[in-house]
Length: 414
Image (cartoon, rainbow, N blue to C red):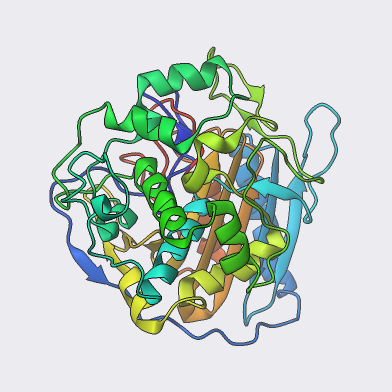
Protein backbone atom coordinates (compact mmCIF):
# COMPACT_ATOMS: atom_id res chain seq x y z
CA UNK A 1 0.00 0.00 0.00
CA UNK A 2 1.31 3.35 0.72
CA UNK A 3 4.72 2.55 1.95
CA UNK A 4 6.99 4.98 3.58
CA UNK A 5 10.42 5.97 2.51
CA UNK A 6 12.35 3.15 1.10
CA UNK A 7 15.63 4.02 2.52
CA UNK A 8 14.69 3.94 6.07
CA UNK A 9 17.00 2.01 8.30
CA UNK A 10 16.70 1.34 11.96
CA UNK A 11 17.21 4.93 12.87
CA UNK A 12 16.77 6.90 9.76
CA UNK A 13 13.11 7.03 8.95
CA UNK A 14 12.05 7.10 5.37
CA UNK A 15 14.96 6.66 3.08
CA UNK A 16 14.47 3.06 2.22
CA UNK A 17 10.75 2.96 2.52
CA UNK A 18 10.21 4.98 -0.58
CA UNK A 19 10.81 2.11 -2.84
CA UNK A 20 8.23 0.13 -1.01
CA UNK A 21 4.80 1.42 -1.02
CA UNK A 22 2.99 -1.06 1.10
CA UNK A 23 1.10 -0.43 4.25
CA UNK A 24 1.74 -3.71 5.88
CA UNK A 25 4.28 -5.15 8.25
CA UNK A 26 5.54 -8.65 8.67
CA UNK A 27 2.79 -10.73 10.14
CA UNK A 28 2.33 -14.36 10.87
CA UNK A 29 -1.23 -14.79 9.66
CA UNK A 30 -2.54 -13.02 6.59
CA UNK A 31 -5.88 -13.76 4.98
CA UNK A 32 -6.82 -13.44 1.32
CA UNK A 33 -9.59 -11.02 0.53
CA UNK A 34 -10.90 -10.54 -2.98
CA UNK A 35 -11.50 -6.96 -3.93
CA UNK A 36 -14.00 -5.73 -6.44
CA UNK A 37 -13.86 -6.77 -10.08
CA UNK A 38 -11.94 -4.45 -12.41
CA UNK A 39 -14.02 -1.41 -13.15
CA UNK A 40 -14.57 0.10 -16.57
CA UNK A 41 -13.69 3.74 -16.71
CA UNK A 42 -16.01 6.28 -18.28
CA UNK A 43 -15.37 9.70 -19.69
CA UNK A 44 -14.31 12.15 -17.02
CA UNK A 45 -15.86 15.53 -16.68
CA UNK A 46 -14.01 18.27 -18.51
CA UNK A 47 -15.43 20.85 -16.14
CA UNK A 48 -13.69 22.38 -13.17
CA UNK A 49 -14.69 21.17 -9.74
CA UNK A 50 -17.46 23.00 -7.89
CA UNK A 51 -15.88 26.23 -6.56
CA UNK A 52 -17.05 25.56 -3.02
CA UNK A 53 -15.47 22.09 -3.01
CA UNK A 54 -12.32 23.46 -4.63
CA UNK A 55 -12.05 26.07 -1.90
CA UNK A 56 -12.38 23.40 0.78
CA UNK A 57 -9.59 21.46 -0.91
CA UNK A 58 -7.39 24.55 -1.11
CA UNK A 59 -7.83 25.15 2.61
CA UNK A 60 -7.28 21.52 3.61
CA UNK A 61 -4.13 21.16 1.50
CA UNK A 62 -2.63 24.42 2.72
CA UNK A 63 -3.41 23.59 6.33
CA UNK A 64 -1.78 20.16 6.00
CA UNK A 65 1.27 21.65 4.34
CA UNK A 66 1.67 24.17 7.14
CA UNK A 67 1.22 21.55 9.84
CA UNK A 68 3.68 19.08 8.31
CA UNK A 69 6.14 21.69 6.96
CA UNK A 70 5.78 20.54 3.36
CA UNK A 71 7.54 22.95 0.95
CA UNK A 72 5.55 22.15 -2.18
CA UNK A 73 2.67 19.98 -3.40
CA UNK A 74 1.06 19.16 -6.74
CA UNK A 75 -2.46 17.71 -6.66
CA UNK A 76 -4.74 16.36 -9.36
CA UNK A 77 -8.31 15.06 -8.95
CA UNK A 78 -10.29 13.92 -12.00
CA UNK A 79 -13.79 12.48 -11.96
CA UNK A 80 -17.46 12.87 -12.82
CA UNK A 81 -17.79 15.68 -10.28
CA UNK A 82 -15.19 17.81 -12.06
CA UNK A 83 -11.46 18.24 -12.13
CA UNK A 84 -9.06 19.93 -9.74
CA UNK A 85 -5.41 20.48 -10.72
CA UNK A 86 -3.24 22.80 -8.63
CA UNK A 87 0.29 23.38 -7.37
CA UNK A 88 1.05 24.84 -3.95
CA UNK A 89 4.14 26.14 -2.23
CA UNK A 90 7.72 26.33 -3.39
CA UNK A 91 9.84 24.12 -5.60
CA UNK A 92 13.08 25.62 -4.33
CA UNK A 93 13.50 26.91 -0.79
CA UNK A 94 16.57 28.93 -1.75
CA UNK A 95 14.98 30.88 -4.59
CA UNK A 96 11.31 30.69 -3.65
CA UNK A 97 10.44 29.43 -7.16
CA UNK A 98 6.88 28.11 -7.11
CA UNK A 99 5.73 24.53 -7.69
CA UNK A 100 4.20 24.00 -11.14
CA UNK A 101 1.77 21.33 -12.30
CA UNK A 102 3.97 20.28 -15.25
CA UNK A 103 6.95 19.21 -13.11
CA UNK A 104 8.60 15.81 -13.36
CA UNK A 105 9.01 13.97 -10.07
CA UNK A 106 10.67 10.85 -8.70
CA UNK A 107 7.86 8.38 -7.96
CA UNK A 108 9.57 5.87 -5.64
CA UNK A 109 7.56 2.72 -5.01
CA UNK A 110 5.02 3.52 -7.67
CA UNK A 111 7.72 1.92 -9.82
CA UNK A 112 6.61 -1.40 -8.33
CA UNK A 113 3.28 -1.11 -10.10
CA UNK A 114 5.05 -0.98 -13.48
CA UNK A 115 7.43 -3.84 -12.69
CA UNK A 116 4.64 -6.11 -11.48
CA UNK A 117 2.49 -5.17 -14.47
CA UNK A 118 5.34 -6.38 -16.65
CA UNK A 119 5.39 -9.71 -14.83
CA UNK A 120 1.61 -10.05 -15.18
CA UNK A 121 1.78 -9.31 -18.90
CA UNK A 122 4.21 -12.24 -19.18
CA UNK A 123 1.72 -14.33 -17.21
CA UNK A 124 -0.94 -13.44 -19.77
CA UNK A 125 1.44 -14.51 -22.53
CA UNK A 126 1.93 -17.90 -20.86
CA UNK A 127 5.63 -17.25 -20.28
CA UNK A 128 5.44 -16.95 -16.47
CA UNK A 129 3.24 -18.69 -13.91
CA UNK A 130 2.15 -16.88 -10.77
CA UNK A 131 2.77 -20.02 -8.75
CA UNK A 132 6.12 -20.82 -10.34
CA UNK A 133 9.04 -20.81 -7.90
CA UNK A 134 11.50 -17.96 -8.34
CA UNK A 135 14.26 -20.57 -8.69
CA UNK A 136 12.81 -21.40 -12.14
CA UNK A 137 14.03 -17.99 -13.33
CA UNK A 138 16.66 -16.69 -10.92
CA UNK A 139 19.27 -18.96 -9.27
CA UNK A 140 20.74 -18.43 -5.82
CA UNK A 141 17.66 -17.10 -4.00
CA UNK A 142 17.43 -18.47 -0.44
CA UNK A 143 14.46 -20.89 -0.32
CA UNK A 144 13.99 -20.04 -3.98
CA UNK A 145 12.30 -23.35 -4.72
CA UNK A 146 9.59 -22.48 -2.15
CA UNK A 147 9.02 -18.78 -2.95
CA UNK A 148 6.54 -18.14 -5.75
CA UNK A 149 6.12 -15.25 -8.14
CA UNK A 150 2.77 -14.51 -6.50
CA UNK A 151 4.36 -14.34 -3.04
CA UNK A 152 7.02 -11.94 -4.28
CA UNK A 153 4.43 -9.64 -5.88
CA UNK A 154 2.25 -9.72 -2.75
CA UNK A 155 5.11 -9.18 -0.28
CA UNK A 156 4.80 -12.63 1.27
CA UNK A 157 8.17 -14.16 0.41
CA UNK A 158 9.74 -13.54 3.82
CA UNK A 159 12.97 -12.33 2.17
CA UNK A 160 14.70 -9.53 4.06
CA UNK A 161 14.44 -6.00 2.72
CA UNK A 162 17.87 -4.98 1.46
CA UNK A 163 17.26 -1.37 2.47
CA UNK A 164 17.15 -2.53 6.09
CA UNK A 165 20.70 -3.86 5.80
CA UNK A 166 23.26 -1.93 7.84
CA UNK A 167 25.85 -2.60 5.16
CA UNK A 168 23.62 -1.19 2.45
CA UNK A 169 22.83 1.85 4.53
CA UNK A 170 26.49 2.52 5.22
CA UNK A 171 27.25 2.35 1.51
CA UNK A 172 24.32 4.53 0.55
CA UNK A 173 24.85 7.26 3.09
CA UNK A 174 28.57 7.33 2.38
CA UNK A 175 27.74 8.44 -1.17
CA UNK A 176 24.07 8.91 -2.17
CA UNK A 177 25.14 9.62 -5.75
CA UNK A 178 26.82 6.24 -6.23
CA UNK A 179 25.12 3.62 -8.43
CA UNK A 180 24.03 0.17 -7.27
CA UNK A 181 23.35 -2.93 -9.37
CA UNK A 182 20.44 -5.30 -8.74
CA UNK A 183 22.95 -8.02 -7.88
CA UNK A 184 24.54 -5.82 -5.21
CA UNK A 185 21.13 -5.08 -3.72
CA UNK A 186 20.21 -8.77 -3.58
CA UNK A 187 23.56 -9.52 -1.97
CA UNK A 188 22.65 -7.26 0.96
CA UNK A 189 19.26 -8.97 1.29
CA UNK A 190 20.47 -12.55 1.05
CA UNK A 191 23.07 -11.93 3.76
CA UNK A 192 20.21 -11.40 6.24
CA UNK A 193 17.90 -14.07 7.66
CA UNK A 194 14.38 -14.46 6.33
CA UNK A 195 11.60 -12.85 8.36
CA UNK A 196 9.25 -15.83 8.06
CA UNK A 197 8.74 -18.96 5.92
CA UNK A 198 7.47 -18.26 2.39
CA UNK A 199 3.77 -17.46 2.31
CA UNK A 200 3.36 -17.34 6.09
CA UNK A 201 3.47 -13.61 6.69
CA UNK A 202 3.63 -10.18 5.11
CA UNK A 203 6.54 -7.80 4.95
CA UNK A 204 6.99 -4.98 2.50
CA UNK A 205 10.36 -5.65 0.93
CA UNK A 206 12.08 -4.03 -2.01
CA UNK A 207 13.96 -7.29 -2.47
CA UNK A 208 10.78 -8.90 -3.79
CA UNK A 209 10.32 -6.39 -6.60
CA UNK A 210 14.01 -6.43 -7.50
CA UNK A 211 13.71 -10.16 -8.14
CA UNK A 212 10.58 -9.61 -10.22
CA UNK A 213 12.44 -7.04 -12.31
CA UNK A 214 15.08 -9.66 -13.05
CA UNK A 215 12.33 -12.11 -14.03
CA UNK A 216 11.02 -9.60 -16.58
CA UNK A 217 14.51 -9.22 -18.01
CA UNK A 218 15.24 -12.95 -18.08
CA UNK A 219 11.96 -13.95 -19.70
CA UNK A 220 11.54 -11.04 -22.12
CA UNK A 221 15.18 -10.74 -23.16
CA UNK A 222 14.90 -6.97 -22.69
CA UNK A 223 16.29 -4.64 -20.05
CA UNK A 224 13.65 -3.67 -17.50
CA UNK A 225 13.70 0.02 -18.54
CA UNK A 226 13.24 -0.96 -22.20
CA UNK A 227 10.47 -3.43 -21.41
CA UNK A 228 8.51 -0.90 -19.37
CA UNK A 229 9.02 1.76 -22.03
CA UNK A 230 7.90 -0.41 -24.94
CA UNK A 231 5.25 -2.65 -23.37
CA UNK A 232 3.64 -0.36 -20.79
CA UNK A 233 4.40 3.31 -21.38
CA UNK A 234 4.13 3.34 -25.18
CA UNK A 235 0.69 1.65 -25.40
CA UNK A 236 -0.67 4.18 -22.89
CA UNK A 237 1.12 7.11 -24.56
CA UNK A 238 2.85 7.97 -21.28
CA UNK A 239 5.73 9.78 -22.93
CA UNK A 240 6.64 11.84 -19.87
CA UNK A 241 7.47 8.78 -17.78
CA UNK A 242 10.86 7.10 -17.75
CA UNK A 243 13.05 4.59 -15.93
CA UNK A 244 16.42 6.34 -15.49
CA UNK A 245 19.64 4.37 -15.48
CA UNK A 246 21.60 7.28 -13.98
CA UNK A 247 20.72 10.18 -11.68
CA UNK A 248 19.46 12.15 -14.71
CA UNK A 249 16.29 14.13 -13.92
CA UNK A 250 14.33 15.85 -16.72
CA UNK A 251 13.48 19.53 -16.32
CA UNK A 252 11.40 21.12 -15.01
CA UNK A 253 11.40 19.58 -11.56
CA UNK A 254 11.36 20.66 -7.93
CA UNK A 255 14.24 20.36 -5.51
CA UNK A 256 13.66 17.43 -3.13
CA UNK A 257 14.28 17.79 0.61
CA UNK A 258 15.07 14.98 3.03
CA UNK A 259 16.52 14.34 6.49
CA UNK A 260 17.51 10.83 5.47
CA UNK A 261 21.17 11.73 5.71
CA UNK A 262 24.24 10.51 7.55
CA UNK A 263 23.94 13.31 10.13
CA UNK A 264 20.14 13.59 10.18
CA UNK A 265 20.24 17.17 8.89
CA UNK A 266 18.10 18.27 5.97
CA UNK A 267 19.73 17.94 2.56
CA UNK A 268 18.71 18.42 -1.05
CA UNK A 269 18.40 14.96 -2.63
CA UNK A 270 17.44 16.08 -6.13
CA UNK A 271 20.40 14.49 -7.92
CA UNK A 272 20.90 11.43 -5.72
CA UNK A 273 21.20 8.25 -7.74
CA UNK A 274 17.92 6.24 -7.62
CA UNK A 275 19.51 2.99 -8.80
CA UNK A 276 19.27 1.57 -5.29
CA UNK A 277 15.51 1.56 -5.83
CA UNK A 278 15.73 0.02 -9.35
CA UNK A 279 12.63 -2.13 -10.07
CA UNK A 280 11.17 -1.08 -6.72
CA UNK A 281 11.60 2.69 -6.87
CA UNK A 282 13.70 4.36 -9.58
CA UNK A 283 11.14 5.79 -12.02
CA UNK A 284 10.17 9.39 -12.87
CA UNK A 285 6.82 10.71 -14.08
CA UNK A 286 4.47 13.71 -14.23
CA UNK A 287 0.99 14.61 -13.05
CA UNK A 288 -0.50 14.12 -16.52
CA UNK A 289 1.03 10.69 -17.01
CA UNK A 290 0.04 9.49 -13.56
CA UNK A 291 -3.49 10.66 -14.32
CA UNK A 292 -3.36 8.10 -17.15
CA UNK A 293 -1.70 5.40 -15.07
CA UNK A 294 -4.08 5.50 -12.08
CA UNK A 295 -7.19 4.12 -13.81
CA UNK A 296 -5.16 1.92 -16.18
CA UNK A 297 -3.53 0.21 -13.20
CA UNK A 298 -6.68 -0.15 -11.13
CA UNK A 299 -8.89 -1.46 -13.94
CA UNK A 300 -6.34 -3.68 -15.69
CA UNK A 301 -6.12 -1.90 -19.02
CA UNK A 302 -3.00 -3.85 -20.05
CA UNK A 303 -4.03 -7.23 -18.58
CA UNK A 304 -6.67 -9.88 -19.11
CA UNK A 305 -9.68 -9.70 -16.76
CA UNK A 306 -8.66 -12.98 -15.08
CA UNK A 307 -5.15 -11.79 -14.32
CA UNK A 308 -6.42 -8.43 -13.07
CA UNK A 309 -8.87 -10.26 -10.82
CA UNK A 310 -5.96 -12.14 -9.25
CA UNK A 311 -4.00 -8.91 -8.97
CA UNK A 312 -6.76 -7.38 -6.87
CA UNK A 313 -6.82 -10.24 -4.34
CA UNK A 314 -5.31 -8.67 -1.24
CA UNK A 315 -3.88 -9.65 2.13
CA UNK A 316 -4.41 -7.67 5.32
CA UNK A 317 -2.13 -7.25 8.31
CA UNK A 318 -2.71 -6.49 12.00
CA UNK A 319 -2.26 -2.84 12.87
CA UNK A 320 -3.96 -1.55 9.75
CA UNK A 321 -7.61 -0.87 9.08
CA UNK A 322 -9.54 -3.88 7.78
CA UNK A 323 -10.30 -1.91 4.61
CA UNK A 324 -6.62 -1.75 3.65
CA UNK A 325 -4.96 -4.63 1.82
CA UNK A 326 -2.04 -5.37 -0.49
CA UNK A 327 -2.44 -7.24 -3.77
CA UNK A 328 0.00 -7.99 -6.57
CA UNK A 329 2.07 -4.81 -6.66
CA UNK A 330 -0.75 -2.50 -5.60
CA UNK A 331 -2.91 -1.76 -2.58
CA UNK A 332 -6.54 -1.10 -1.83
CA UNK A 333 -7.15 1.52 0.86
CA UNK A 334 -10.85 2.00 1.55
CA UNK A 335 -11.61 1.42 -2.11
CA UNK A 336 -8.78 3.57 -3.49
CA UNK A 337 -6.63 1.26 -5.64
CA UNK A 338 -3.05 2.10 -6.55
CA UNK A 339 0.22 2.77 -4.80
CA UNK A 340 2.29 5.40 -3.11
CA UNK A 341 5.97 6.07 -3.47
CA UNK A 342 8.69 7.65 -1.39
CA UNK A 343 12.39 8.14 -1.73
CA UNK A 344 14.69 10.78 -0.35
CA UNK A 345 13.21 14.17 -1.22
CA UNK A 346 9.99 13.09 -2.90
CA UNK A 347 6.67 11.35 -2.29
CA UNK A 348 3.87 10.42 -4.64
CA UNK A 349 0.41 8.88 -4.39
CA UNK A 350 -1.53 7.61 -7.42
CA UNK A 351 -4.87 5.95 -6.69
CA UNK A 352 -8.20 5.34 -8.42
CA UNK A 353 -11.62 4.88 -6.81
CA UNK A 354 -13.73 2.66 -9.10
CA UNK A 355 -16.95 3.43 -7.23
CA UNK A 356 -16.66 7.12 -8.09
CA UNK A 357 -14.50 6.68 -11.22
CA UNK A 358 -12.15 9.24 -9.72
CA UNK A 359 -8.37 9.49 -9.95
CA UNK A 360 -6.20 11.18 -7.30
CA UNK A 361 -2.51 12.06 -7.74
CA UNK A 362 -0.38 13.80 -5.09
CA UNK A 363 3.28 14.76 -5.46
CA UNK A 364 5.43 16.40 -2.76
CA UNK A 365 9.03 17.58 -2.71
CA UNK A 366 9.79 16.21 0.76
CA UNK A 367 9.66 12.78 2.37
CA UNK A 368 10.11 14.03 5.94
CA UNK A 369 7.49 12.51 8.21
CA UNK A 370 5.30 14.52 10.60
CA UNK A 371 4.44 12.83 13.90
CA UNK A 372 4.96 9.41 12.38
CA UNK A 373 2.94 10.00 9.22
CA UNK A 374 4.10 10.54 5.68
CA UNK A 375 3.25 13.95 4.23
CA UNK A 376 1.68 12.33 1.17
CA UNK A 377 -0.56 10.19 3.38
CA UNK A 378 -1.64 13.20 5.45
CA UNK A 379 -2.53 15.03 2.25
CA UNK A 380 -4.35 12.01 0.87
CA UNK A 381 -6.44 11.77 4.01
CA UNK A 382 -7.27 15.47 4.02
CA UNK A 383 -8.28 15.42 0.35
CA UNK A 384 -10.39 12.25 0.44
CA UNK A 385 -12.23 13.37 3.55
CA UNK A 386 -13.67 16.03 1.22
CA UNK A 387 -14.05 14.28 -2.14
CA UNK A 388 -14.96 10.77 -0.90
CA UNK A 389 -16.01 10.87 2.77
CA UNK A 390 -17.18 7.25 2.56
CA UNK A 391 -13.76 6.21 1.22
CA UNK A 392 -11.06 8.00 3.18
CA UNK A 393 -7.45 7.21 2.22
CA UNK A 394 -5.96 6.55 5.62
CA UNK A 395 -2.92 4.45 6.40
CA UNK A 396 -2.56 3.92 10.13
CA UNK A 397 1.12 3.82 10.83
CA UNK A 398 1.52 1.41 13.70
CA UNK A 399 4.18 -0.04 11.46
CA UNK A 400 6.09 1.03 8.37
CA UNK A 401 3.71 1.87 5.57
CA UNK A 402 3.99 -0.07 2.37
CA UNK A 403 6.72 1.20 0.23
CA UNK A 404 8.61 2.33 3.21
CA UNK A 405 11.31 0.64 5.15
CA UNK A 406 11.47 0.61 8.89
CA UNK A 407 13.88 3.03 10.44
CA UNK A 408 16.38 5.12 8.68
CA UNK A 409 16.87 3.54 5.37
CA UNK A 410 16.75 5.17 2.02
CA UNK A 411 13.14 5.75 1.23
CA UNK A 412 13.15 5.00 -2.40
CA UNK A 413 10.39 2.54 -2.78
CA UNK A 414 7.30 3.06 -1.01
